Length: 329
Image 1 (cartoon, rainbow, N blue to C red):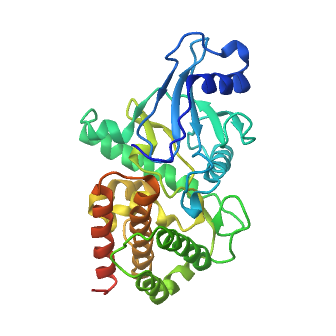
Image 2 (tube, helix red, strand yellow):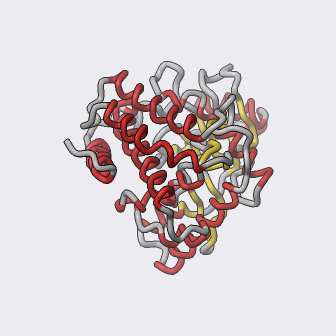
């Protein structure tokens, strides 16, 4: 996926980063030692072969001068903390972090090296027809179970995994929506709705958020394309930068309840341990989808999209969600 946030670097800089992380003895001699992993939407990632033949992955945050959403500022540090939490407090498989550099001494951005997981991207393999239906269903159930285990980690405050956070989930979620609405207003993007109309939907339904009283670690972006599969099992969960403490019902695996294009969530929900939602839970889930739709619209301006495919889809999705909340133009 192409994006202005991808902080690509020449081989000379990649060599310097390898030397810093693994020592001069691991710097490759030959060219072509790094291949960009192109599926991501935000950070640039490279698959790198060290001199001894070992493969690792390097992730680099966006350039300092490229505008990002408010919530995305310093997001790689949140990812590192989330990976630490998941690896130390759960049995969920995450790649081992080999080296993190937050000094900006070589590249003016946060970055880290992690182990390379030799497996198929579960979502991409399923999409390409390389996995049969039964294995896909089992994989989605396994993802749901892994996500439930992550959600068992309890924090002290709602909101970011790094920083002060909030005493209530209502405050934390309201902040998320306010930030992305302000990000959209800053670049003058058309949501199809006045920001105050979106705010009023939250105000009218915010009481549903008060049912959430325990800050649980949530991934927010755990879906099939952020997981790796081998021999029919999930062997790694990737891309933890959006993790926070909040409501497990905000997890991406449930998005299909409101946005059918994201797929039938039945198998995921079976592993997740949720089969039916109460009316209040349904309202919360719809609010989370509303935030997702607004974010997707606003992101298109910050990512420098050259076509309107994602924008048009997100606009239609937001219209549908507003209608579900009883709002019409």
